[in-house]
Image (cartoon, rainbow, N blue to C red):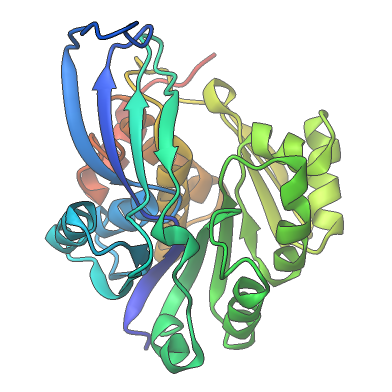
Length: 315
């Protein structure tokens, strides 16, 4: 029996968020905002916390700097009982950090400092610990400079050889990232990019064409998150469906895709049917969008299941 239900490798960031912001003050002016908060975010960070809130035994694997932001990220992860043994202090890096200026419609332009996500590395000595898990999630391809040079593919391949379920997400991908992503797809059970990221990676615009392109690269299943249009699922067995989004009031979309990943993994962990796994992902993402700061409204598995039962879907 693995020690962990869910191991989340990759992008962990210290986020400072405020809203509503319509423009950056000119010169030395000051604008006042209604809300201000801090959060651990990132394609691995948000996923780790939501999975922990859902009751999974979670391990975080990534990097922070030897700075106050790194101290806070580790303390916050620990407050959710996320294991941080393999969160590395990278001495030549600061903690990856963002200032998120959330717009009234929930859009979240950000100012980001690339940091220790580029510096951490899973070596052979740590590999057995890292892979002592039921589900392995990698989030943040394109930012993990050391891991992106072939090591992530090795870790995923070893995980698959050991019978571990593998999931994958990227960070704001461009066409230049496809050479980094392509070697990972044959080692991935579930690839979960946003439609914008998938379009950038594939150079295609039709969703079915994009899904086929990614499946042809060897991934087991593709789940495209479509924002207000829901989510699309395609896999190698021919299973195909699209589910509309929940009808909610959006506060901030920061971290929605990352929270989706953890909700989906919760469904896998519980052995739920695939449509329900996707629905759990959507419910986690929707709750996230209803507050400021990644995972702000997600509280527990029971609350997420209740949300699924009581919240209307878009027609």
